[in-house]
Amino acid sequence: MRRFFLGLATVAGLFLASSQAWSADKLLNASYDVGRELFVQVNKAFIAQHPGVTVDQSHAGTSAQARAIAEGLGADVVTFNQVNDIDFLVKKDLVSADWQKDFPDN
Image 1 (cartoon, helix red, strand yellow):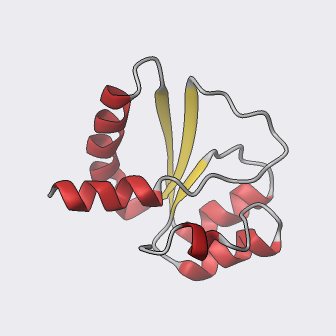
Image 2: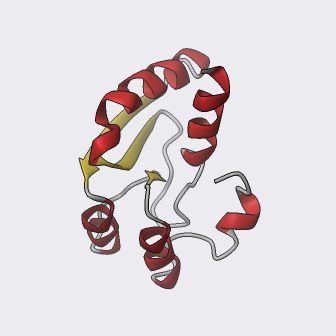
Image 3: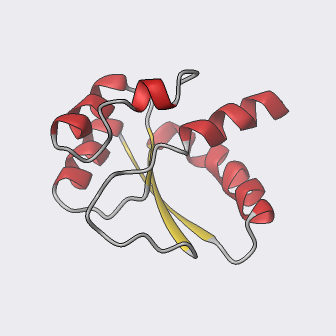
């Protein structure tokens, strides 16, 4: 189980390369809808390791989330279950084209 959460934390590390200022005390994770209950647990564990940080969630289908981000949703992190939606964000210059090299286990 610990390895599973470590993998999810790595996925949560897909920070968007946006022009918006990043606030270290508050993060917005745009995630796929099915992961809603899971990310309650992941966020709780993350916050325990990073006191003073809050994590807000946005849940929807990954394609809807990707479109919302492209249209201005200020997500700091994406946790998607569809590679093509991450690739969409790459094409919009919102995620590094090297994201798979940076996160080889995802």
